[in-house]
Structure formats: structure tokens, C-alpha cells
Amino acid sequence: MRLARYFRNLGRWQRRTALFACGALSTFALAPFGVMPVMFVSMPVLIWLMDGALEAARGRRRILAGFAAAWWFGFGYFVFGLWWLGAALLKDAALYAWALPLAVLGFPAMLALFYGLAGALAAPFWRAGPVRLVALAAAMVLAEWLRGHVASGFPWNAIAYTAMPTPLFMQSIRLAGLYAMGGFAVYIFASPALLAERRGRLSGLSAALLLIAIDLGYGVHRLNEAEPVPEKVVNFRLVQPSIGDHAWRTPEGRAGIFARLIALSSAPAEPGAALPDVIVWPESTLPFLLEERPDARTAIGEMLQPGQTLILGAARFAGRKPDGWPEFYNAIYVLDDNGQTVSVAGKTHLVPFGEYLPFEDVFRAIGLQALTTLPGSYVPADNRQMLVLPDGLTLYPLVCYEAIFPRLIADETTGASAILNLTYDAWFGRTPGPFQHFAQARARAVEAGKTLIRVGENGVTAVIDSHGNVMQRLPFDKPAVLDVPVSLP
Image (tube, rainbow, N blue to C red; front, side):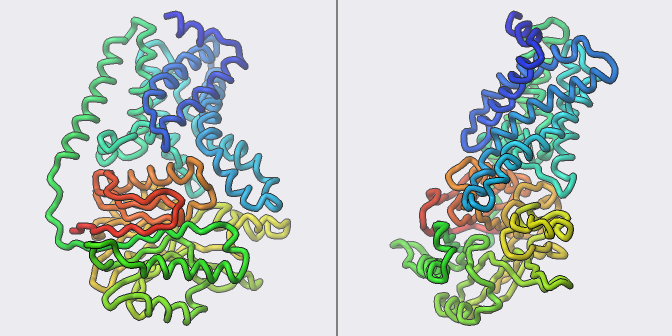
């Protein structure tokens, strides 16, 4: 096959450029684009490019060649998949513009090391036929698992998400899990490379078609399953305030934030809609510490109707270090109709460089604490608490990017009526970031087989059922409320 020969015979830098381009192209299979067919182009080309890189290499050189080839693919994938991280730094460019190359190039280069490891592990098994596809797929399972666990983990845009553009393709994650799904995806997407050779072509392509049939068959089965009979219907109001950055910079602006939250929460329901039972505010939107503002509790109690409950995300003072430096929890509060706390859950999995600074005590002396979001640092909660509402309803809390971790879902949500994900993605504006975050949270609903209630400061705010179907959703980046009845077991 002429195309395969062309890619195998490219020179070193032509090959590296092509590998980078293949990684970049693959990101169009992710949210918000969801163009899965591009993977049937990028992955076969990756195989042919690795064929060329490994053909003449032996021993240690072969392993290094496999590492380099997969690293360049990963570098393109993470640069184009995570470029929007720079948007947060440009919110205050005078302070953080210096870090832009680290966010847009340095961080992707580091993440690409995991894909490089996959290439190195597959290299000794690289030979004509489907064996090399199996080797790369298996190595990617390990690499993605490590990426999700090493140094607290960052499984953002795991390769499996390229294979899940709609609920039909999502259901198998409930059987295989995120990382194994990624391995199957790599094999299936790479299988057209076998068209260029005779050895193992029929068996390799047949295996890919069988995997596709199993995925689609299980998807159809799950989507046609009868939903369990709900024990109760709870009317939620999801509040999306969509506040501009300027509002946080002055006392008047911060007072306006709280006023907008109150106004949206107490707005009349649409004609025929039921009065909300539970009102939900997003993560970190409250512009003060709740413990320091009894007047805010009073205002919340006056806003709530008898029997209503408010859920909100807010910082919570956790104490001070010996040097007097303050520490905070990122928490979710449940308040009753008197504005009193009836349940609270803290975030257990923090964002490195966003909520805490690794080796903070060492780096504070040179000013790197400026990377944190408050003039202090967050600390993780000791354990994950279920949120219990006054009527006994239980919600499993995921604060912000905790929703990207499958391990926070496994066996933990059994007693919950639904999953609650509060987030603040306004840092990233109208970039792919918030939509990628939403797609990954959506997968957690499928994994757990639970309804997901998600509220973002500017979006994506939605209710997703246990099959990943979006039941209702607010427009992105517009102040609005979503009144939605949710059937819960």
C-alpha cells in the first residue's frame, strides 16, 4: 500500500512532525467536536510512522525509538487538547503570562512521557501483523492508568474519550472501565493499518469488528433497559450565575455576586413548574467565607421557602500553619430553610498548582504561591462524606475536577441517590476546556449508573441520566436557572 510506504519512509524530522500532527488531529475526536472518525486516520498513520521509526532499530535503540515516536504523538495530543489552560493565566496576564509556555508546552511535554512509555513498552513486540496493535493497545492501558494515578494523577482527555461521542458508545465503560476502554479504542482505531499488509489482516480486522459489535451491542442493550421505578421526584433549581471577572475585584462587585445568586434563586418558576425543593449553586461562587458572614445565612434563610434546601460550593477555613499562613477546604454545604448547615463535604482530591502548590513550603520563599487561587492554600478533607439533605436524600459529591477520576466513583456511590458535581470553569472562557470537563463528568454517570446533577458557574450546567443522556441543559456562559424534576431511587 503506497500510503503506508510513504509514512514508513519519512525522514526523522518529517516523521516527528507527522507524529505531532497525528496527535493534534486526534483531539478533534474529543469534546466539544466529537468527530470520532478522525481516529481511523490518525491511529493507522501512527502505526506506520512507528513502523518506520522501529524498522532498523535494535535493542535499546529500538526501545528509545518507540518512546520518541509515541512521545511526539502524545505531545501533539496534549498541546492541542490542553492549550486552553493558558486562558486561565491570561485572566491576570501581568502576574501569570510568564508561565504561559509552561502551561501550553511544558505540561503537555510532561504528560506525553506517559505515551512515550507506552511506545517503549510496545517496541520489543513490534512486528508485522496485529501483534503490534495489541502491544500498543496493552501498553496504552498501563500508561493511561499510570497517568491517572502518579503524583495524584491527571487522567484528563484519556484516549478512551475519543471513542465515546454519544451515549451509544459510552455504555461499555461500565463493563471495562476507562483505561481498558482506551486500549480497545487504540486497537480498533489502528486496525485499518492492517489493510496495508497480508499477514494477520483477516484475523486482525475481524477482531476489531468483533470489538465494535460488542461495544454497540452492549450499548443498545443498556440504552433499552427499563429504568428502575423512582421512589421520589425531587424538583431541583440549578443556578448558573455566569459572573464576569471584574465583579470579583471590588467589594461592590462581590456584594453584587451574592445579590445575583439570591435573585436567581428566588426568581418565580415558569408557569406550571413546581416550586424547587433543592436549589444548587456552583463551586466557589460565594465571594466570602460563610462562617464569617452570619448576615449571609440570614439572607439565605429569608430567601428559602419552608422546606427548601440550598446546596452551595464555598471555601471553608481549615486553620493556620505554624507560620500563620491560612489554609482552606474546598467544600460543599447543605443549608436548611433557616440558613443553617445540615451537611458538609470537603474536597479530597486537590488540583496541583491550582488549589495547592506541591512542595509549597520550599517554593513559597521564591513567590510561587501566586499560582494558588487564594492567599493561602487548600488542604484536602480527611475523607469523602456523603451529602445528606434534611429529607434524607443522599448525594455523592464531586467537587470540580474530581469528576475526571474513575477511582472516586468505583464502589463509592452505592448508597447515593445521585451524583452531584459542582464546578467553576469560568477560568477557561469559551474554550474546549469546560466542554471536555463536562464530557468526562458525563462518563462518571454511566460508570456509576447514577443520575448526575452538574452545576457550573458559567456552564456546563445540566442533568444527565444514568446512561449519559443529557436530560436538560442550560446555554453556556449565560446567567440562568434550570428548573428540572429529577426522578431518584
